[in-house]
Length: 196
Image 1 (cartoon, rainbow, N blue to C red):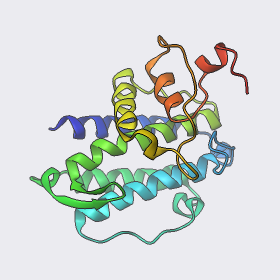
Image 2: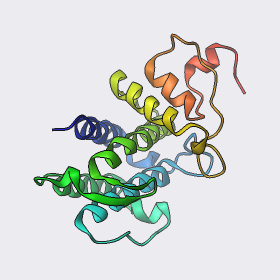
Image 3: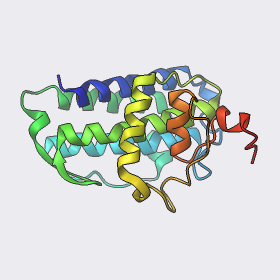
């Protein structure tokens, strides 16, 4: 198993842990991303995973839908379905070396899933914050996702992307540093007096 696949699988199950703890009535809560509710945030992640699975299977890019429609009436069930479909798609000899088209350009499946962890982990945190559950992001995954984000540099920032990085102490927990680099305000930033 490649390091990218190992980290990606851990990322899926980190999101899974968040999704399983969200109460049915909390999916419409506003997320830290001003544009989306918790449900819409999950729909965004689900569509991204569907895109990867479709690229692996050679089915082309799935039709775009509103994030809320992607998540459906039972977001946790929609999540379960896409998680299992993608893990099935990845469970074939040689699949990691297959070249696919991604929003980041053409690359192998292994490279693509290595990059995608930042998106799923960011939104696992968003959903957790919106619904009052613990994202429980492992430190090593947060560090890896931060490395991926930093490699993108300013290309990740702008309308519809990530906001400006938020200042946190250098010794802040790994998840706080990762989330802050992606424009979110973890507790560590508030401890520094950044209450705005």
